Image (cartoon, rainbow, N blue to C red; front, side):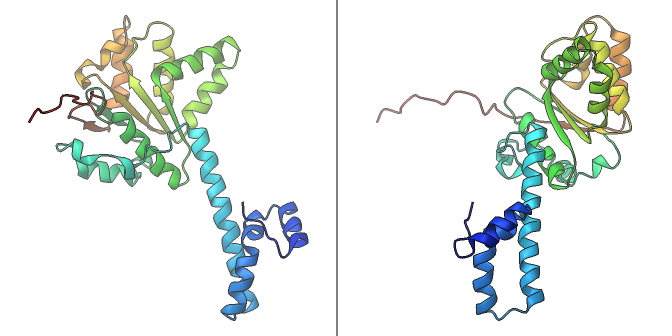
Length: 253
């Protein structure tokens, strides 16, 4: 944090008023005002812009923390070259987050290590940049959260909170099969979000295998997947796993 050394009393008052953005840049802006011969209004506009920028940064940082997204899983860090068959046109469309307005699901499948989680989180980062509430959870952690809420007598409130989240990202769908009451909880959440909020899901399973996550209740599987697949964007990631071991063999001359 930048300290305002030449005007400590003013800096303290600004911080008491929670105007840290102004306090951090006051000395710099004072020098700029003198050098550029700024009017009082122009000088004030600079200070207000600094404060608004600081608040935007703080708001974004808080939203990212609540979203549980990894900070480095952005589209800028995504390796398109590793996925030559990727539908980049659809990815570009998804990055605009227009699908959120239609409450459309986004389904991403492919082998382990092809970047499904990264791409899902990258879309989440884009949504946060647009001021949308995002939450990233694995299927296992999602069901665990609902289970704990039921034990504590807070299931309905937790379900309502998850249902209202602007963008819910469920990672590793189908990695762990669901039995009762997990399958019922999952269905209830998807049903509550259907045509109301967008859900992104990633899975190692082919779309034709998604019903395998429901161990016993195939009727519930059909009802749940019918809602997920309706009007959904579907992406298939095909490529080598980025987690594969490096070739340590050395070529002998």
